[in-house]
Length: 426
Ligand SMILES: N[C@@H](CCC(=O)N[C@@H](CS)C(=O)NCC(=O)O)C(=O)O
Image: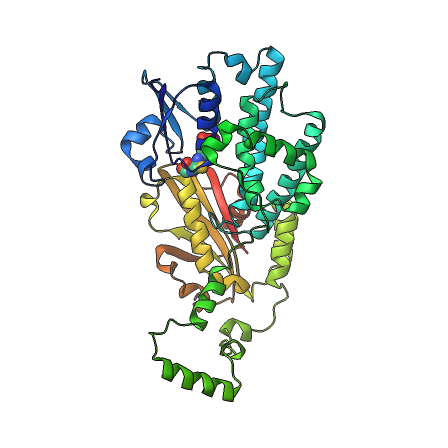
């Protein structure tokens, strides 16, 4: 059987599984690209000619027609089955229900699962409140599915459809990294359903046996912690045994095990010696996180701002012309924030990715402890400092104030370009 086309993208990926499982169920052959290198091959002109967004996967049919988006590809592939109604529904109602669950999976479930798991798996930086909000949403949606599945084997009708493959593929990571045995007991119907769908020969042939989480995957240690750990146990060249023994004895004698060594006391930041402020930064951060930015949080800020204890800074990236895809720009912001860790106690800021793919910029504002015209070492000494222009601004100037408000709210007429994404340093 000649392949009906080729699915381009990394093969070990749930979106890729989705299409190939449907192909198996449909009894059609789809060629794939096992050597595909994500981040490299999907940036090549020949790939972008098939899918201009550079996202994976994309499908190119034998006749040259192209389809992007894994669910759309799955529908296309299913339509080539001898009896496509089995996978795509036989009635208007079934077809609508299959679409309903497919959109639910992609527009609701997947973003919640990604928001919960990606920061934990280290794909994107961990921003606790954002991750926790995603987790709440995920729990809610899993509960909704669990209830729907109370008296159903499959989501639509009595047989497996494309909807089941899409939903189950989106749940692969959730079952592997998140839902423990206790959670699975609580989500009994959903678990039974997941096992039924992933237990199908077609599913196992493509994705292998489903993995069920034993211990919930925890976030990787923040960069700073990792660094400290590394510094604590420096790599030593191999030592002769006798020397090692002697050393161990000395160590035992000293009763001074490595783990008990007290770290050097941290040098105090100059900022800790400033006169106390009437606006603890944590209060602002909390207020900002828990309230609408405009007008509630901004009103609070203008009422409580301590101009003798803080300064406002406009922050602009110097190399906007080198930025490409917006998601990469936003990841760059995340990396910069990670490397600004030393300033976390003394600064709050928002950096936005504005514009569109291949034509975007990074722009934002920071509140920094200290009212001096010079930035503290925690910021000026950060690795990315030279890639940005930091300009001290007068927050009492109405135009500046409006920009700060729009920036912190990620929305408003003074943003220099169309809002796309952003991150909060807090
Ligand atoms: N809805 C799309 C989403 C595709 C997608 O976001 N793929 C990710 C990899 S799993 C990607 O290509 N990310 C890179 C990018 O966003 O440029 C689909 O299902 O195909």
